[in-house]
Length: 79
Image 1 (cartoon, rainbow, N blue to C red):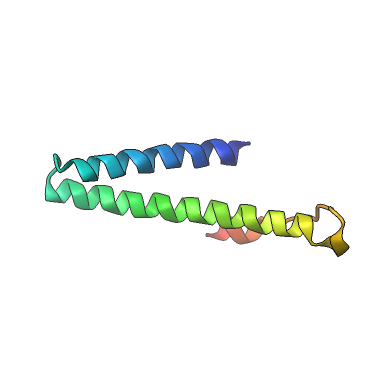
Image 2: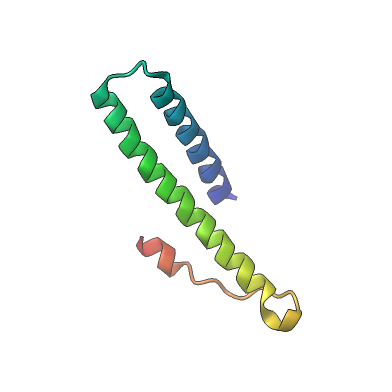
């Protein structure tokens, strides 16, 4: 559940950054900082979505039967 909250917060931050960049009311320097922050947030969101997709694939694969296997979170913790 914590991941969902963090993901949702990151999406809100990303939306705010897009709005600020689109407004044209910030300086070039501020725009570059916001853009860099947005890229980092977008990468984090992408990683979260990829992890969720892997979990769903593990859930659905077992001989056509729905089963849940242990998911190795060590891969995502290293990133």
